[in-house]
Length: 101
Length: 241
Image 1 (cartoon, rainbow over the protein chains, first blue to last red):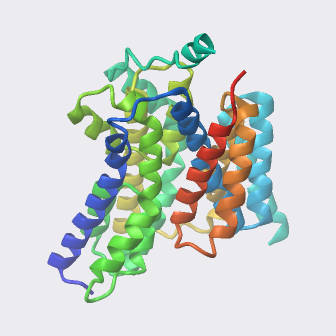
Image 2 (cartoon, rainbow over the protein chains, first blue to last red):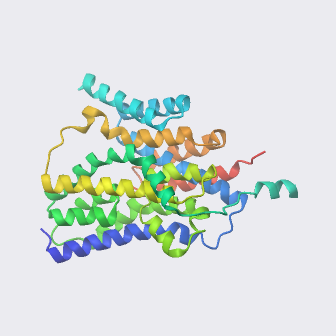
Image 3 (cartoon, rainbow over the protein chains, first blue to last red):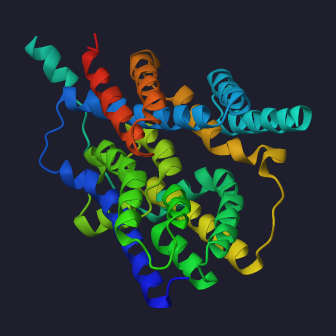
């Protein structure tokens, strides 16, 4: 088990790297003028990073997660309510676990 | 041509503020979702104790880091002596997407003074980014909603960690209640609910198509960064009428 001192040092380093990752984006963009092209890039970037996260999570899990995510997206398109979308996805995932385990 | 260009470049990022009312609104918006992060916090607290962290260290890490994916990953490297280099690399990889999200928020965030930027960005995470970015795009100008959402998520994450680390409670299987899918379902809802759906179909498909095969090629985390950048570039190809 690491000593208290080295453990706390590691935690400080982990927190510092994480904080740096959070402030780096706006700092890098400080001197960039937001042209329509850059704006399109940033908008697509926003959606793409979330899509990439979802795709990675589904790919690393399986059909159950994929079905839950698909249902959540479908309910959102119909209802425009993120809460209903989330609850439907969870309900499907819970039912799936009940019947297939 | 020139006039079209001028109209196209009309987006104004003026009038950006950071108010207490905005922080409260952001907190209310994300509270229902944030409550579901408590079980994840508990799971982290339990796992951290099992990996040899003290309860103080586990809670300190959640307080100061507030990054679920990175924190879970560090537990694999919690050995004696601590491998600082490996820890740094894995934390960098799993947090690199924050830089992408920050860049996407820059048009609004950079209207604030530096100290307030640092305060707001300290609480930037996937869910409050996913919640706030479309709102800003729709004309919301109060950065408080980003900070408020982040504070509520952070509080739930730390509370969960404390329960898990101090109580060591075994939760049972989160799959029973579908809690394990809450995060991807929320993100899927954000994607399905975002404005400009037609323009975003290509970036969404390309980003997904890059992220999945790259899972086996790139270290975890970098696949998301690469996919986001490629998706962003695809987005620039689309020319609004």
